[in-house]
Image (cartoon, rainbow, N blue to C red; front, top):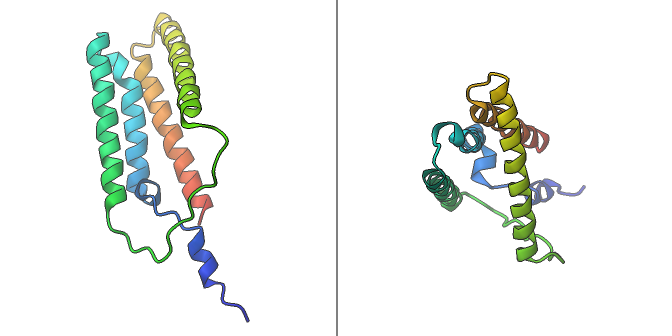
Length: 143
């Protein structure tokens, strides 16, 4: 008879924000808040500063939660090498981000014409719900 307990530990994900319900709520909260900022901060410079502060605080939180000493018996395998360079990934994500914001600006303008007072807050709520639902689905699927 073979011992199969070792195979269970290989696929274990020890990323703190994905492992707990509180972590998934924090991810969704940051996404929702960041999407809703344009409804409350009208000037571009303070809006950019707010985005940068939010990004820095989220990055700090992720760093802190990942630095917590977890009891890991087996270190996860690093991902295989990719043919895509880091600058290509960053450029692609930047283009997608600009297109998303441009599309949301047009949608926000159309919603305001139809009487929605805070369309970016609506986007934030939908974004937070989407992030939470996706991370919760992924967490339940890995059980």
